[in-house]
Length: 290
Image 1: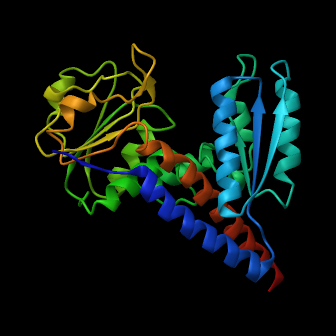
Image 2 (image 1 turned 180 degrees about the vertical axis):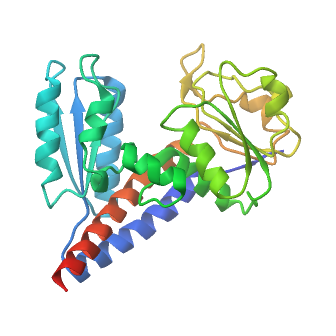
């Protein structure tokens, strides 16, 4: 029987730590970590994510500000707003909620966020830093997955880790973080041959494909650690992951549930990145004053 890795519990403990560090920063330097969240259009899922991010900011004592632009806002209007926020000393992190309307290019938007305020870690400079292992921020979901694996005390070094999914947001950075910890990493995707066989050889299996019940019991090695990044709806409209939980759980040594696994960690790591951005700003200010 797989032991459940509770992202809910781990994220609560981390948030308490972030809250204490933010309070110390405020007492020492008068800096309150600030997060600006930009929402373009009325996507219902995006509105929920934005609300959850604001709630998390309140919980850990951050200042947060939401900027709403209409569905018809131009790319130029969005870039102007980002330009203003890049110069705003009260805002240490800038997050543009994705997806954006079709007429706005997400890459252009990401590249216009100041790298030191890019708390999603999507800017090419931050992506490059992750590649070489010398980074200020980590993408929130992969960083959360690493915290979950570390929480169970499983050694990553020397293990075979299989990442299913190659997105810039999860799959690719996930593979890099595991590689930095000396894992042997295989990345699988829609063109991979012998997918089931490769997955079944994993000591640690991370699925981020966004397909309900995609990972079945025959794709999981006895005793593997299974991390489910998927957020899907099944045929009944019920929230589920990429992993066929009921059949995989008995084979896994550890497994994350959906909901309550990776999900809570993502926003917590965003808080971690925003705190880090504020701390870096403080040390830069201190350095230039000396």
